[in-house]
Length: 127
Image (cartoon, rainbow, N blue to C red; front, side):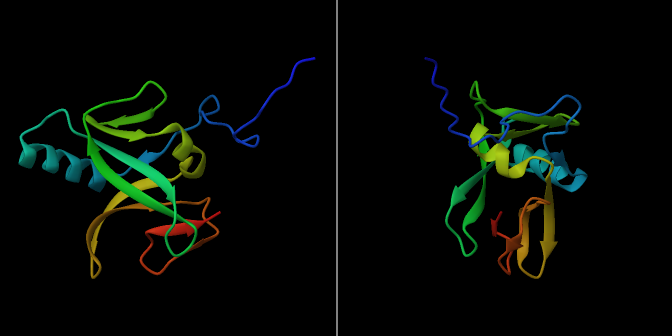
């Protein structure tokens, strides 16, 4: 007897043929390139992750990273690289990572069509 354990509850962890992982906006690309110049480190990449917590159940986190793990998904645009870990991908597929400057300050944001609700600041969401 063969037993298959689906720890992802049937959600695909990789893109379907022709599917875009995430969109990486022009303003997010410009900001990442600017950060690389400020840090004098051309190897910096932007990592976006999803964790449990926040006002709405899940929260986005952004960090600068120099390492791509074997299970990471990557999006490259104009010499800038966005990294998504395998667990977070299932919540972010089809989203856009953008850089926004407004009354709340300057920050990377996720425009996520999978989110059914978000908090007021947009840092957390539910699906």
